[in-house]
Amino acid sequence: MVKRTRLQHAECPIARSLDAIGDWWSLLIIRDAFLGIRRFREFQKNLGCAKNILAVRLRALVDHGILTTAPASDGSAYQEYLLTPKGRGVFPVLVALRQWSEEFSGAPGEFPTLLVDRDKGRPVRKLELRAHDGRLLRDGDTELKPNPNLRRRRRVSA
Image (cartoon, rainbow, N blue to C red; front, side, top):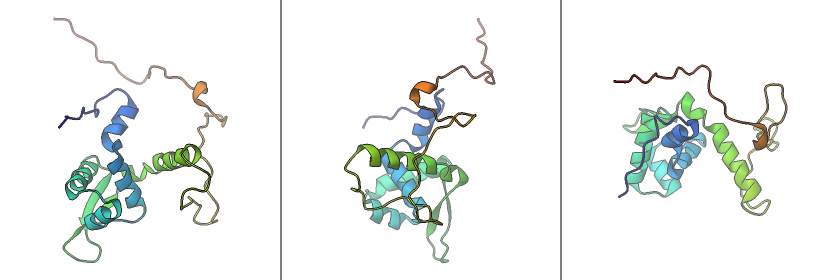
């Protein structure tokens, strides 16, 4: 089995994010947690993945602070997996992935569900990236610059 490269100390924030949630099982577990699934058996039934894979992914999501465990709400001996605030922060990522897929992978109306505003029942608008002044930004409108708040470690010569 090929050992996976760890990215938790990478300088790129995207790489660090992928270290925590970058495999597809993890993203689907988080999606299901947003849909109200809390127990191991429910995740396994809904996802159809092997129990050993699910156990590893759930443990990793707990270790990364995306999920937490709690005693079952019905008082049984089971435990439940709940989204933490960090886990809830993944919501816009899932919405962006969903909207990207709806736009680029299939015919309009192909998917059996729509993401709608619970109060108004209307479809959620496409996510937009906006500048500080409110302008809509596209990929060509951004660039990476050195972070002035980052203190670089000075190399000490021997």
